Image (cartoon, rainbow over all chains, first blue to last red; front, top):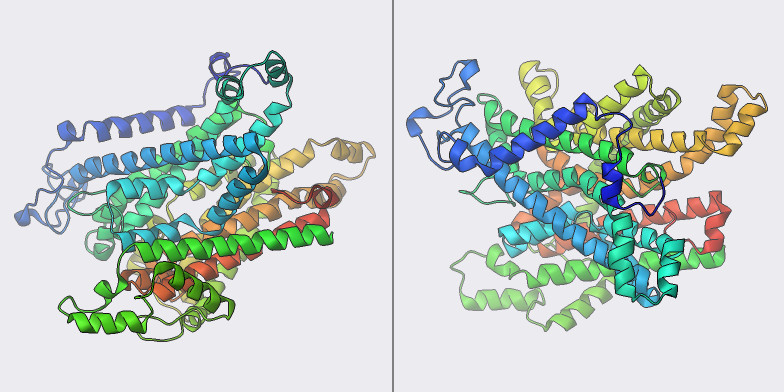
Length: 297
Length: 311
């Protein structure tokens, strides 16, 4: 595939074969989760913080419960299904916001490093090394516990996970794009650097960056879930899938449904995202898969 | 080679210094540890006495310089909770974490490398689809959820394994599976990509052309070349694995560094949190340094280029 085909053109190329059924169902599931999270207000049979103390620890409908609480209730009689819908909304909001932040930060720093070289490149690569040396979870645990938490802070911290991968990838690709024919000819006709970078190099490397974002998204969901699992993420009464899982952990013996349903939603979401991401990678950027250290497998 | 070594060493030191600085300022700027540590109704003079005792009354730059000087002497400070040496506390817990980490690494290599190689050699056949489907499941599974499911099945239903604790091999089984699944799955996917890449290289075709048996080609040509990116990957993976270990240790009550971190964070024990962060940063940086050096040793091209991000 010629390197200078725009992303849109590449996506519009007829597929060699249609997406496999697995990928289609994964995409369908992601769509459903998004819809359910967006329409939580309409779909949820109960409020997410609404307590029914007379209906505590109700089992799910098919395990001997009633249709009032399809997926059962927790220790305060809150409806698990409704909480999953609202929790998914928070989890997706944090993951999407975090991915967006990390993507912007990493891509801009990668461009800056490749454009200015010299000390700027050294400084960016230094930050990349530091980020790689400090697991985001460890850093986020410390910051959230000491700074107290708020949704924006949580999004920023979750976004820090993976920015160094975008930065590394962008820098490498921009450096190699600068040597290619189309950039050289742009430079010869006197195009300003920002124009070359934004309008010509960026569209060409966008495919690989989007693939990286897709592959990184599951990490982001898991990071948010892990932080909330420790009780350091979203604070009650607000809820997220990881927080539900963390709360349900203490009641595994007599009420497995509190932890198992939200956990399954997290797992199916990350699994679907991985399947779609893998397919996109093979489809959009066959070279990325072969570059060690670039697209994380 | 000496220049390459020095450049890498200097970069590693700078990275560790950067991490120390980051940890110091983030933790100092994020609130007064004494407020969390002492009862809320403590008299002001008591707070003041502790502040002086811990050096928290000095200006921030002075605290920072003192911290760096102490670090250079190997003094990581004392726990604000019980006054014990912070480094000693961390080292005490390191054994459990190393035991878990070592088991997980061995498990991941024993499962991931053969699975990835078989998948690559049988590309497009059922065994490839089967291993890679298993890998994507392991990759997408949140480790804390897998841990809870294992506890539910093996500890509560079947009553085969203890649900938490430390000491006997039986205690190690579930944490190792929980953490090892994800690492093995990632490794299998990575090995498959690397082996496929090498299989497409001209020298492998040449070796086949020379009528070398396929086993000989794999052992002599494919493995050594595919190993280079895999080693780099394992170095990078250490950081993520530590993040996973923090979660796993807390799910299973494993008395390692990860558990210490979560407990100390909850108690706002500044010195201990800082020491844990430093120990993690130093281990990841040393692992990457070792990988880089091994890489430079295996692949002469890296040495010449000065070794900027071999991976």
